[in-house]
Image (cartoon, rainbow, N blue to C red; front, side, top):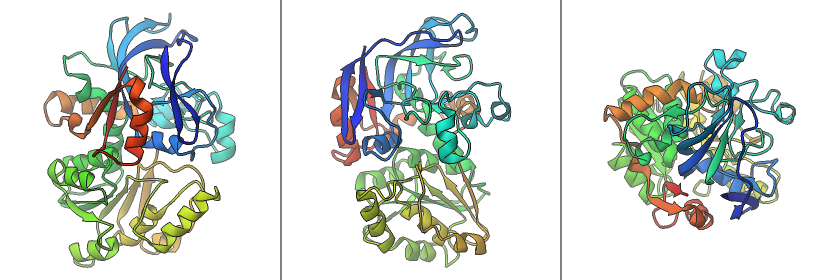
Length: 390
């Protein structure tokens, strides 16, 4: 089959690789009909994620049609149309039973590598390094799906791929990000970043009864989407100081809830910490540019909360923990517990409460994926979200 493979920093190629096969009786094989390029994929593309190997198949936002099932698969059959979550979860371990699906104790065969780096291993992830399982991803013609009775959700309506594809990651991720803020009715929510996850965090903040949503970015197309589709107020950090503007907008109190939807490749308009981060990253002294996390801590009101859906890789430094502690802040983070959210959010789509396809700006064939990665990374051609169609 054809698949998009990682060959090093800034080097992804469409290769011919072996077709996936059933390896366990709980597996299924899915023929991919659509797959997204995620902002997290850029961390791999830019060389920030360790334990990548040449030839690794990328992609963790897939959907398609079941073409084969293992002997122990009971909930899926050949011909079912499914969305596959980016997390791989067994459904039976201590954490899965607590619906902490992204903390699954069973699904990462390379758990020891992750344990040495993190203390404990999270769940295995599709297409996201050998530390997180070495599983082939879904930017390909076919995908092997472990624990097939636990992960995929069946799409039993005629909704087009574009409306349901993002149940694989970014819609639930944005929703959990907003939920993790513990939003109370009327709260002011500040969202750093206006990429795809942030756009869904904005939408979700309104669903959870926020009173105001303020979105922060510098890319005109993303800010426009946040205003027009997300009904958010916006701050262009390249033109004004974020802290000063947020304090002005909140009468000096600061936003009640803050969401870092940027993660480890944050940019800033010439701030000292961002310049130091960029210099250290250039010589591989750090894998994380944590400007947004620092700024959220500084901006958040006393007693407020910070949610971090943005992906971090290693050891971000210069975190103002004194401010975090003295202001009495709360922080929640984590990879998304996908199976907790996929069904209820599918219901919202089916009822017409949201059409997630609004974030799509580019649809391309799998063969054009390498160029699409560059366009997405460099924010060219108004690119906000790319969907690959094998």
